[in-house]
Every structure is written in structure tokens, then in C-alpha cells.
Amino acid sequence: FPKTWNASVKSCLHHVTKQSSLKADVERGQSVPKQLQEKEKVLLSSIKPVLQKFVHDNPRLQLHALYTVQTFCHDQDFPKGLMLRMFNLLYNEDVIDEESFIAWKEDVNSDFPGKGKALFQVNSWLTWLQEADTEEDDE
Image (cartoon, rainbow, N blue to C red):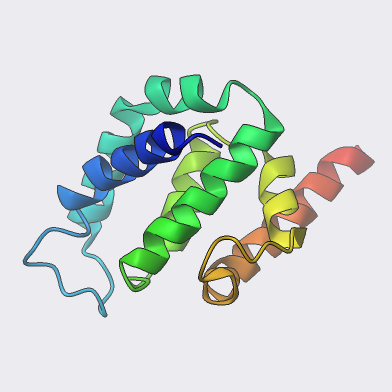
């Protein structure tokens, strides 16, 4: 993937978090206060059209976007709950499809640092997502 594409997604993440959960005065090892989580959500929602343009309903681009989230969180030393909040927001805002999250979970790729720690942070959410997806398939 082109470096500019990667930098664009990363800069969206930077925009959302630097004004909310990763502001200078926020303790990274602690749970993020509700009002900052809300701000994170509002900011991501406001750039949703941009993010959707980047991934174009394309599973490969969505998978790469998830790896960009993983790398971003790794570069920030995995602040408490950030990976989970970003996955949740990207899912709830219809930027990334269930299938792409599952593909990310199952993909073994050593090109992006921090997969083990990232998986640890979002594993129960991914399990919930898979179970919800399976229930929908059964109906």
C-alpha cells in the first residue's frame, strides 16, 4: 500500500485522539474519562466520510486500515482501551465490515508490529462480533 494512503489513515487517527484520549494531560495507563470517549466518538464521526473514501467498501483496504490502527496504537505504546475503542467506533460508524475484523484477527502478518498485544486488547470484542455475525447467518 502506498505510504500516502497509510499516512492519511494514521493522520485521521491522530486527529481523533490528539484532541481527546491522547491529549497531553491524559494519563495513558488509566481508563479514559467518558467525556473524552464521547469527544473521540464525535471526532471520528465527523471524519467518517473521509475514512469511508479511503476504504471504499474494499476488504483489502479495510484490513490494511485495521493494521494501521494496530500500528498507531503500538506507536503510542498501547494506551489503555484505545485499540478497543477504535475498533468499536470503526465498526459502529460502518467504516469497517465484520468480515474485515475477522480477517485481521486470523491474518498472520509480521510486517506490522504489536499484533499480539493488539489481539489481547480486542479478543473478547472480536469473539462477540463473530458470535453476533454467526447468529445473523443462522436467521
